[in-house]
Length: 87
Image 1: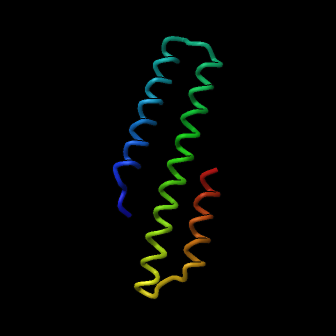
Image 2 (image 1 turned 30 degrees about the vertical axis):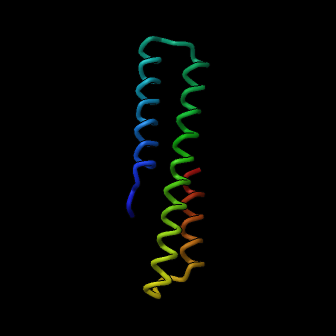
């Protein structure tokens, strides 16, 4: 699987969010603000997982058609299971 710059940038942005949250905790910011930022980071992670799984699904289906390996149905089921596990 190749991870494009968009995917990497998403992870870097999440990394920045987490550092910001840690700084907020060290500065003893209000609990509500910290939770809000943690929720935003979790949402960003969930969306990144979706992007990676969907990109992987497209690649795998193309590859299966070319190599006559796993059926597209099996690959789609596997991708859905990855998404479900991430929740």
